[in-house]
Amino acid sequence: DVVLVAAPGVAPPAPAAAGSSAASPSPSAPPSSAPPSSAPPPTSRSSLLLIERKRPPGQGRWALAGGFVNEGEPLGEAAARELREETGVEVVAASGGQGGEEAGAEGGSAPPPPPTPIRIDQLRAYGDPGRDPRGWTVTVAFAGVVRDDPGGENRRALSVTAGGDDASDARWFPLCSLPAMAFDHMAIVRDALRKLAREEEGREGRDEELLRDMRAALRGGALRGDWDRAF
Image 1 (cartoon, helix red, strand yellow):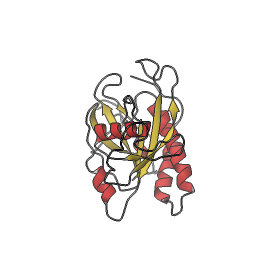
Image 2 (cartoon, rainbow, N blue to C red; image 1 turned 135 degrees about the vertical axis):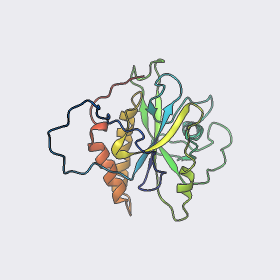
Image 3 (tube, one colour; image 1 turned 180 degrees about the vertical axis):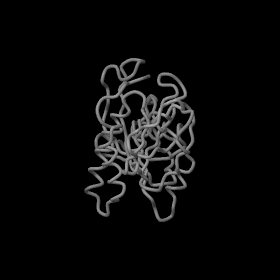
Image 4 (cartoon, rainbow, N blue to C red; image 1 turned 120 degrees about the vertical axis):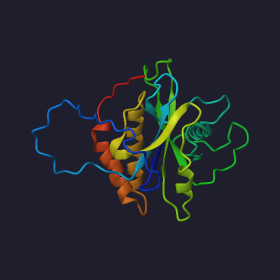
């Protein structure tokens, strides 16, 4: 599974009302007597890439892009391949780090480099019993940030985002308004944002808006507490 976060303004805008979890008021519902809130709704220009699952389990639900590793395929290459197949976005898995692998190692020759410098790093493994109704399934998650670049290559790379393979749709959701997700993907996103925020804090020339958006998402209700693992 791949947690790919786009820095402010880099990803294409989501369609109007896409993924909004707020229910529309019932036409027959009485008007609220409570005064309108003076606080503006939360906004975020940083976003997260999700896919809509085409097949069970979790058909029709939003989830992280991901899939099964082919025999002899390095984990990083598998993550990049699944992301490309399901969203059209090209990335490269970094070597080293927490068990990260050199592209092409133990699995034949390396694939041609992507046209953009978008990099993902291994996050951690998830294997709690019951996380997948198909049986005991371990996922190794990867995470990365897509930053703006002077030539605009990353913006162009993300402009091709579209659902493919096992995904009926692929969209960038603002971090402030993430939809409910299948499996334990909310927990994976939470862990990834914590790691990415820590790294951003120590980064020279850090992106203050990106850091603020990630912190706000972690404080918000969507990424706190337990989740209903509806498949």
